[in-house]
Length: 242
Image (cartoon, rainbow, N blue to C red; front, side, top):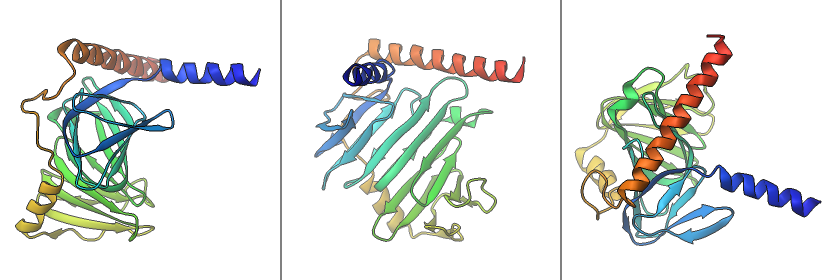
């Protein structure tokens, strides 16, 4: 009976596995953890909701998602894909467990109800149509957020309501230690910003859908995303009695 229950649970999880993006560029070695096992990633491989993605030393990987947002991991980094709902008001949520990631977020996240967040053990960065770099150092237990375009809203993990959030502009940086509020944003030297940008750049694959699996796969992912978005709105309207 126990084995049957475990089999049904695993089957159910597999059935809800959702393709949300793919590897657009890869330098060196990257792996994905799915179902407990780590396996190598190759260019054009699909990534799914719930995946853990990590890079080895001297390695970088660029992930292009179905909403056209891009996440590029520097070497020695690990990212979790928690939520990725496309549509007119998209929602994306990622966890940065270690290392650095550069996020490039499209203008759809400026819509009402849209939300894009990257969390670390000490901080939460939220944006609406912008780009930024997040880095978490486990040894120092400290997060650094660097703004690249427009404004990035940063709050401490100890301040989930954002009562003491800070706004980080292009070229500015804030740091957040565990249990502390974000430091006052300061201007970084241009050379430091260029270095961080270079560390979170993966060469290879040109164009909007570089390295994409194929056009049919893209269409299927987008149809599923729109269906999920409609279902979510339906549940919201039902809960509101409208």
